[in-house]
Image: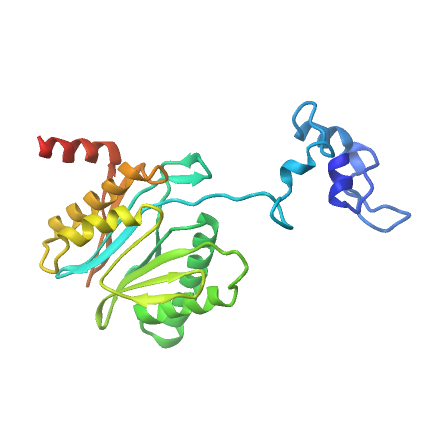
Length: 275
């Protein structure tokens, strides 16, 4: 019960199993939905909240001592046939690999997608909100939203929460009446248009490959191979990147998921070419 007292829980923990959700007749406030046995079963054996309080405090100032590192490798670039988007699928929580099958490309509509880098929850939430705004725009105006307008909406949304510790770094890629569009947007409200971006902890390694081999007149197969080679190079050096490599192509017909390949298989493929 020390946990509830430390948290300043306002409700009394009393009553039988069958009347926990009923109101307290003397205070008029609802009772806690848990009893003491439930609370104690949630805590590790011999764990004292008061004695271990320092483990949950931030020594550098106020706030909880929870600092999760983020890591990923996502990239996108324009070429003569459209836009190539290649991402990994590893999710990390600090030094712990929490998943190797995360979908880091989020569909906004049939012609527009967004990538995920930073906090998974922040990226998924705000890009779903963006998808809602894009669908409303299409219903009101009877035409698809442009890539520039979609990226600007996302930029304005996250900028209003600047300083709120959001963690978001995304690329908005799509096709509209002006052709291919590619924008980088982050949680500080930055919005940049460009032909080539890589976002995430593995991006410096991916850029080293992209800057060496990227050119405008790539074929579709060459563009996908370049993107995969860049992400594989990043996974080799960046422990927060890995899992599977997902590749997408965006053209006038919309976006299409091309391949889902294990990163280890690609490493063996490129190593065999060196021999």
